[in-house]
Length: 104
Length: 222
Image 1 (cartoon, rainbow over the protein chains, first blue to last red):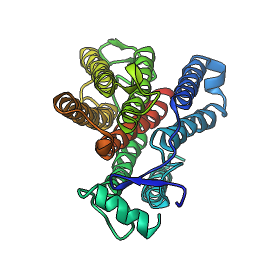
Image 2: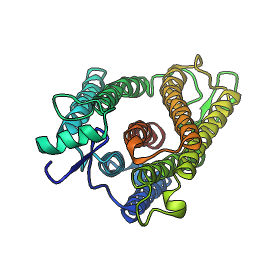
Image 3: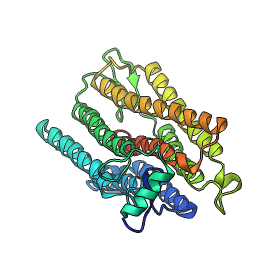
Image 4: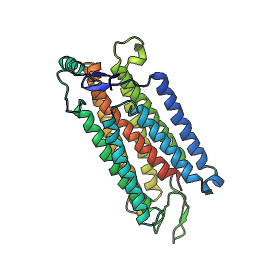
């Protein structure tokens, strides 16, 4: 953390600049367009690849927002642990419940 | 961060809430809160997914349904409308980071005009959140008119609970943003206030990422 300055009680890190923020927004927009476009292709919806691909696209969007807009990529590792830990528990909970109720 | 740097920073900002980690306790608290919110929404999403396909009567999310009386119900989810609201919420996250950048870099070169106008970006973010809530109100109203209420079937119960909880979070976020906007208009937000805006931004982005998951799991996956 030595390369980061402290300001007003929280460590201010190198955040993405305007240009990067706009690129991130564009990527999020494009992925959303692809998701919705895929929804309207019946053959693709019926295929076994539909759900995994949609989940991957959603996970990419999720990760991009968390990393760049929430600055977790640039922030202290304690914050990463505070978020990723419960997120894993949450994902485990969803998976376990779906297995228990015969949905997977 | 060295001890000398920390001491100097402490002198400059006496209102800072230090912890033994060297991090501000408010930011630690908001990340812990967001972590707990992950589990709340995981339980709501799980409930929806478990009940999915187990409703005895329609309307259904992706399939048409004919009632015993011969009434035909079309698939109830309106993907074009929800796609538009998703786009609005995604853009609101962009406006939010612009607001934070404007406050953090106030007075710095390159942050004049619109780029440094935190009031504009805060107001735009709040407006986008309000538009999203408008879309949700439209969706809920049209669902009720089409015969789906929270008591109609398992889909209705789990859908309205999940999206309603998310909508409540967006509402809190909009109120939070309007509070920051009022402070900004009254005395102006300075780089010293960047943590306050940062915490609000973290909450707002979290609401956005929850919607990213909901949009895919509930609306797109059939």
